Every structure is written in structure tokens, then in C-alpha cells.
Image 1 (cartoon, chains in turn yellow, cyan):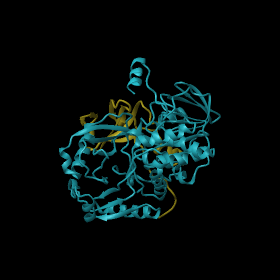
Image 2 (tube, chains in turn green, cyan; image 1 turned 60 degrees about the vertical axis):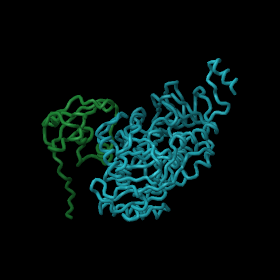
Image 3 (cartoon, one colour; image 1 turned 90 degrees about the horizontal axis):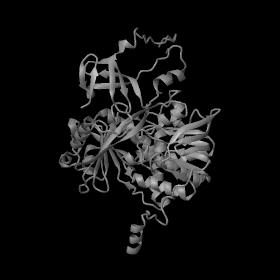
Image 4 (spheres, helix red, strand yellow; image 1 turned 90 degrees about the vertical axis):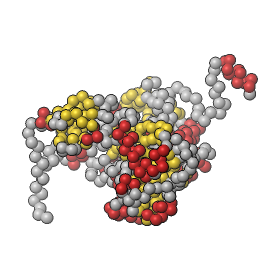
Length: 100
Length: 415
């Protein structure tokens, strides 16, 4: 059994966790081009190295950051996302000026 | 014969065949018209069709390991075309047609065995999806029917009709579903290509891509620098790593995919049976072994290790489907490295680098596309970058324009 340490719940079986993608810098959704948004949504380095990733403990719906090596599967570090994101990121929808 | 054996026994030389299937390795030339990176099924198929249909034979296939030793050897050899989108069905149907003729074309038995593929529906939503797939398939000349529980029971009497408390309601019966010997496909193509003058260089790793003014001019290899007119990458499982050497990123995430095989038993299962709700597909090989596989691992990794969790869940599902399998022993397990795209369709065509072509993103569906991908990619390369209509929908820039070709629902075992 592979163990991952959740910053909130402690060491748990990795099957309790869900992978959420590489941590990437989000472009401003209101002002970026389609290409930039696609780059953020679909593209990735996908390299063999230590990668900073989003993970969720599914039983508690708690999202956090893990640093994991994508070649050896070694989990080096897990920590709350507040260590990277100091402010809340707002996802307000772009005002289109249309009423549907 | 005993004397010649004795002679070799004393000489210390390896007894080379007089007419080997593959020519002995030569030294890398300074320049090739086309360099194909990756000597798997796709790479050698591209070389074969370049030589056969376009008369381009100054071609080198550079393979870091050995012929067909990567995912070509690791897939479960399923051939089918019962996809969801018209783009996907058109493309894979062509592949099935080509597969049927390959043994004759190669004069080399690829052990093509048409046995049909049955996908199980356990929910009304799945039946609706299957109905659509059956109609799309029929429209493009495939043989696919939606069949009911009674017919499934007749077709596969050993199947548990209530696996994992998910009653089998209906099935997508794809009569064109087949298997073939994957190594034979790679060898057949390699033999045909090298006989026409293509060079296959095994144990030759590409370490860098040389680009001048946005145009590929050559590649660095573990055996020296090679100049080329154009290059194509066909390195399933390592697409992103090679693309990084050419200086761009791909819309790909790489996951392991695990599969297993049991000890051989008497023939009992002609069809390939899969259930995406149980994340499992089961088939019996010509040798009697039962092969089963599932979806990719739950998170990305470049490693062919196996995990107990996945083995347990895969075995549990397989035993639910065929309860008598609980008495069988596992013979082997293995994993492949799958380059998954967000829409479960491949990436074929142009790249940001001029004259550098992509044959990537083949996730869990690469083997079944080997002939048609080789043929269309050869056409693309020979024409200097004119994308054939059949593969135009699979261009990488579909992601930039948000027009994905969604085949996620048409995979055999993952959702």
C-alpha cells in the first residue's frame, strides 16, 4: 500500500486521494487569448522530475499541494495550498453584456 | 548439420542466418531524407509506406532500444473501430480494413483473428451511448449492433450476467473486433521497409533535435549527428520528453497502464469482452491464456511498476465477469506507458517546428491504428507537410481552438 500524507488528515492510503493536475500559473481568464487559455488547460511539461501537483483527499474533499517525482513516484512533500496561494483567486465569469 | 553445428560451437562466432529477416546494422549515414524517431509499430509502418508508396528509401529509423520493444510489445493487441465520433470511426475503420490484408501483403503471418468485441452496458445511459456508436459505425461501413441480454448470454455463456451487482442490460457487439500478433506487425513492417532500402538502427537513442530558423535540420544521436530533410517522432510513452528536445510542449499527460495474463486454459472465450463500469476488459489468446487490462493508473507516472491496488481491483472485476477465473493463477503482469490526451484521441500532423512531424498522444489506442497511421503519416511526410484529410481532425492545434475529438466514452475500460 502506498501512503500519502495529507496535511490535514495525516498518512493515508493513496487510493483515498485524487490527482488534480500540475500546479500551473493561471492566466487572467478575462484578458488572455484562447491559445494562452488552452496552454493552461491542456498543455503541460509532463517531464520526469519533481513536479508540484494538486491532490485532493476525497473523503474530506480537502485540496492540497504535493511535490512528487514522476519517475520514481516518491512523494517528497505535501503541504496546504495556502503556502502557495496567499490570496483567494476569484473566478468571476466574464461579463458578456448579453442576457440569455 | 551436426558438423556445421560443431563448427559454430568451436568457432565462437554467432551463426548468422543467410537471409535474415532484418539486415545487419550498418553505420549511420551523414544524411537521410527522413529520420523516423522510434522503432515501434508506428515508426516502422511509416517507413514501410514511405518506401512502398512514395519511393522514399533514404530513411533511417532510430530506435533507442530494440524493434517493437516499447508499447508495441506491451499493448493487449486489440483491433476495433467502434468509436464515437465520425472522425474517429472513419480513421479506425480504415485501419481495420488494412489489418485484414496485412498477412498477405507481408507474406508473413500476423495471426489476425477476427473474433468480435462485446462491450457491456449496465445503465440506461450506457445503452443510449451504445445506440449512437452503433449507428455511427454502421454509417461508416463498420459492423456493430446493439444486442440484448438474451443474445449476450447466447454469445458468451460463461459470462456472469450480474457482475458486481451491475446487471448486464445490453451490449455493443462489434463484429469487426479482432486481435493480431503485435510483434509480428512490427516485424512485418520492418522487414518490408528494410528490404526496400530503409535502415533500422536499434540501440540508437536520439539525444537532441537540431533546429535552424524554426526548421529541423538533423538529430543528435548516441552514435553521432545525422542530418535530415524531415523528421517524425513516433515514441509512444515518451512523446513529451522528445518534444521538449525540439523545444515545444504537448497537450499530453503520461500514465502507466497495467495488464495481466493468466495461465492457459481450454478455449472458452472467442470474443473480447469489456465493461467500462467495471474498468476491465477480458480476452483469451490463441495460446489459451486470458489477458485482462483496465484503464490507465489514477495518476501520472513514467514507470512500469505494478501496484497491488490496481491488480486487486482489476482481478476483482475480471472474476465478477467470469467467476470461474477465481481458480486460475496469474502468469505475468506488466505495464505500458501511455501518453494520454484530454480527448482520448491521438495527435498526428504538423508541429511548431517546420518539417518535424508528430505521431503522438496514442494513449491506450495506438496498436489498432498502426497501419492507417503509418500510411497517412507517410503521405504527410512525402508531400512535405500537406495534411491528409483523414488525419486533419487530429492536429495538435485542435486544443488551441477548443475543437477536441472526444473519444473518452469509447475507450474499452476507462472513463
